[in-house]
Length: 187
Image 1 (spheres, rainbow, N blue to C red):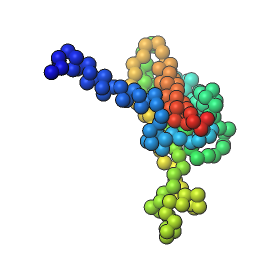
Image 2: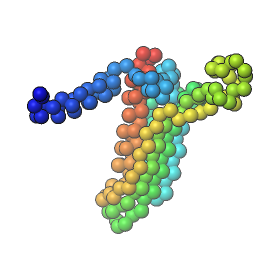
Image 3: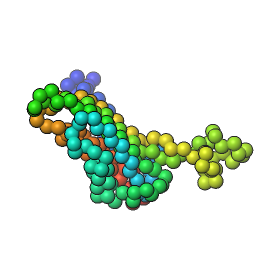
Image 4: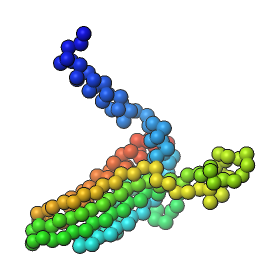
């Protein structure tokens, strides 16, 4: 009989250890589908809607933040370059000043990786199912394979956009970390 004092930590560690080992080890099949791109550069598309929010949250500013983080990791693609994947970053922020020092900010941020995938169900060619290299454009579609959305409401005293800008930066860092981890062998 195992004493109760030892049973709870053993169960917690037993559940935690495989997840931690998986995060550190080789990528899972799901991770490879979601993020593997042969370490090819990833173009980024940025969409910003800012109604009354901080002046620093603009399309050029957010685009520069995203591009610089991808560039630092060596995975940025030149503007206008198409490939097998695209990183989309959408930022919606709306703020209302309640007093000279109090601001209520609502934000929705979505960062997702779109990959060009082969739609076998739409391919009418008999006997050639799974022949993606010869697939016509109508059988190839953009699909989100990795996504991290964030939304919230913040009440800030004396600060405008720093919390939202910091959150966008952390989300980009998470993507870069996961992308590099999954594509490490190809890099």
